[in-house]
Length: 90
Image (cartoon, rainbow, N blue to C red):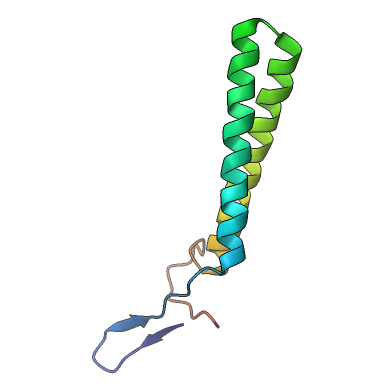
């Protein structure tokens, strides 16, 4: 929660991410590494279909990870484009 104090200073309380967030982030990273390795190996061996499927899986997982990270940041008030200071309920 962001609250202005009397002397013009701002206090920001930082929330920790829950344990399950880190488990899902680790699973996402593991899947990214596995699909990336599969895509590179398939491309090296000349298996174009398998490489294409793996590259698509890498791109979809990366996009999902970016969107999930932005959504988490938006909940924390990081994506507010207004110039005013907003408060966040914890």
